Length: 509
Image 1 (cartoon, rainbow, N blue to C red):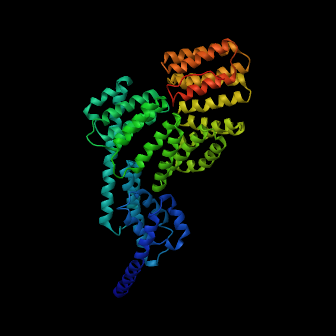
Image 2 (spheres, rainbow, N blue to C red):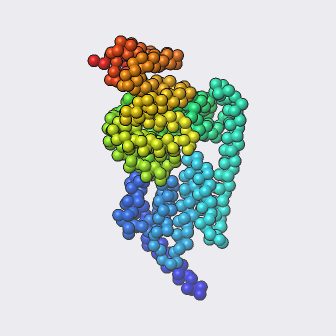
Image 3 (tube, rainbow, N blue to C red):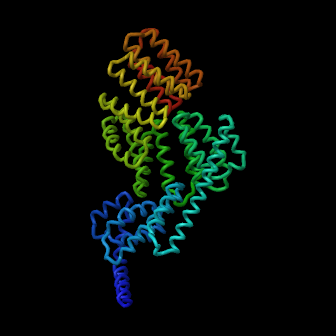
């Protein structure tokens, strides 16, 4: 029996050695391509779907930054490769090492709960009794460290929540003086606090980011946490239409990011920066940046990053009035979003599709997707996003000729926007109301409402050129010389000030 076992082990060792060279060549060929193409390459080369190829992929992870993509690829194919009957323990090791590698990658990315889940899957893959007890103990130690990190994360969460609750929002940046808040763990928690507030209370979200960047300035070394703090700050400024400040903050985010192995984090900053460039009307720059971010996300096989590149491209198509292309792209993204992203991303696609469909004149398509966006945003308690979707529905009502219904609907949307101090957005919404009044032959109501918008812009100290344009509109309505075309001209001019704040207003010819 012993001789038989020795012979079997010897034959197995020979089998492993015989396929190692070919497996290494296959792995090198796969790794020479973007991760998004790996599955397609393997499908086209089924003879390469071997244990040796997958083992070589795992070995290459030590020198390749795409560790998460490698782990996911190996785990996806570990159960599909054919093996001799005596080689099944090697399949077990593929699972063990694949899950551990995935845990390492997630831990490095800061996703501790997912990392712990991967380590636990690795331990489970060993089976009982474990074939390699020492290695299983090593994975167990990794899992124990992550559990401690999660406990510390919970402690920091409680600390930050308590301090924010006990301190008036205007004074939050002063908390940066507190030494117990100096650390990257606090920066990660403040980023979470920002994301909770960003679409519900954008002004408050901005104050959270001011605290975060004040703490980041006290850190001795560049870090991903500091970069995220500046990225969040830039995003908060964008949402308040402060574009030059937003771009400067994105520059800081890129500057404080460590130089090594941070391509994904740099691309995440880039895709957020692209949103500011779009809103500022710098479309060519936005497209160039989008393409570079897309290349990185494809290289790393980052599905969520690829999705957000698609959403950003759709927004760019809409802003450049290519509405049909935007609709087609958004519809193609929906199944992908439902597979890889959360409700907020799916709702955003429905919302964007609805806006583009209105401009395309496909009102049935617009109503269907806007209604779904409102339902999804309401389900995740995102009132500002609900308001923006409802704004589009109000415009849709007016386009369909339901003027009274549309006016009442837009008034309610304006109240929500003003409640969050989004005066410019509320003013642009109000101009839709002014146009609707003119369409229904009510110039007095149109003039009164236009002058109200002037007062709101003046009180908020918005761009004086926007106020000049609104006063011109008010006077034109009073002189009975205004039309829907006049209103839209003023609307476009105010929007253009985001890109060119020093532009002079000229009446439409």
